[in-house]
Length: 555
Image (tube, rainbow, N blue to C red; front, side, top):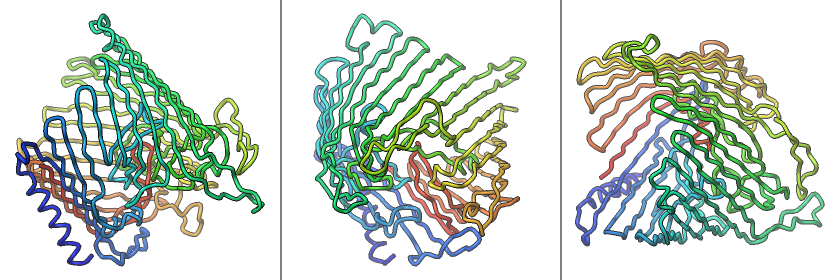
């Protein structure tokens, strides 16, 4: 990275922070800055390669101006070069996002870049996740109308961001939602909840030539592809039901290998909660529901819709070694979740009470019959479940042992199908995981946290066999010690070690300082290759051996 690029990055941060002077044209300025730097060296044991660019940097500065019902904003981004694991197409710098907006009681209008979601996102979700390197913002016009109490109508059009450019497809959509309780005054004094909604999204893309096996023939592609969804939320007291169904027209694309089968998706969530207890049951079914603004585009960019994962979002290290990625071409699954807060001064809760959390999820392949390839319906679906994609069950118990000591213990069982990550032919991976997490408040200014994890797996690493050359394989131990010094400083030391039938040793030491809204963190160590997933959307994470620096601030 050249000195000029460093100067540009520092100047951008300086100008952003300086802009916090309030009262510009009578308005209010807010913003945030984030910089993440990375240095890595070669390490053949863990598979880390040497970087030609000795430092990589992701940086951004967001500035927002508001004045009554009016607002505007812009974002400067720099990827010089992108951090390892981010798509190289992010390389560059410049103004990446800008908008002006009016938000009144009756009408809201945004021109420029915007993010939007219809329902749970089955037909439309324009959003950003900076840690995944994902941004599918729409550049265009977004209008929201609220003509009566409880009624919301949205209409939008635009093209999606594609790294430093725009996708070829034009996205247009309309959505309506009625909150029946808000619209009908006599219901407002009841414990009832009732919301219904529907949305429609269209993608237009010019024709292109997709040839069949016989080059004299090409696919007749639909230029307009539509998708609609209906949804409802019903509830009374502690009971709640959310349901959404979506259907998409014929959409031959690179993800489904250019078949003409229509797509559909269904989400159900039934739950009950009261003070100290909650339980829920979720169901999901997806069939050929990948929806992009460019039919020939692979990867995670340019998705118009979002298909959420139905598995628990784990946070402990060894529970995230094998994360689950939503299979947009087809999957079906169930998840059950129970949380119980045991009262204190009972035989089970003890002096301080106890929290119990039980979760289980299973996701399977659709049971299909192949009927043809490119240019055909592709397959038919039979009733029942196909082979397993993923399954897990976990029990977490948290209990205070004294006023200053709290212990959380977790047991989990996982089954993972490597086909989720496009590794057909590999055997299923079965894991047993045990975790202990102890927090000790030593004094008013000091606290310690100890974490120990063990994973027993039937997977075995073998560099000579491509089906077994996965550095996640083997039995693992993980340990962590974290020391918090007042409200400003922290230091942590951790190590992940595949002690049996594995390879590598992944130690890390990090320290950080926080003051108000500013946080600085410095770390050195090794990072295991694998996948990073958030909400069922994933990106590969290569092995790294080196230094990481992170700075965030807001104003």
